[in-house]
Length: 78
Image (cartoon, rainbow, N blue to C red; front, side, top):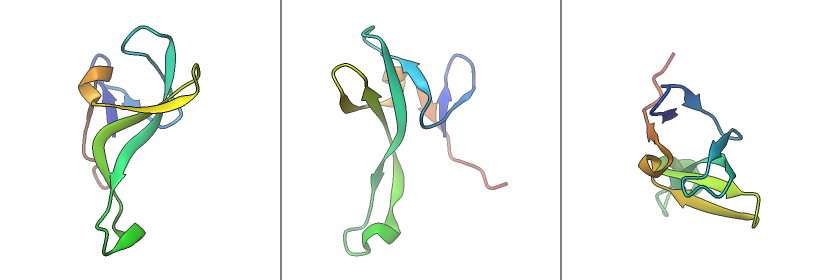
C-alpha cells in the first residue's frame, strides 16, 4: 500500500497526486512489478517504486516514494 506521509491515508491506483516538481497533477498507477524470468507472470511481485501518469505531456514515469511524500507498507492479510 502506498501511504501519504502527511495524512497516513492510503493512496490507491487512479488517485491524483501533486507533481513533486510543481508541474501540476499526476495520477498514481501502482507500483512497479518484478518477476522471476523462469516463472513468468505467475511470479509477479510489487516493488517499491511508484508508477505515475502525467497528463501533459502524456507519459508514464516512476518515482521513489519519498519523492512523492509517501511510503510503501506491506498489506496485512484481513
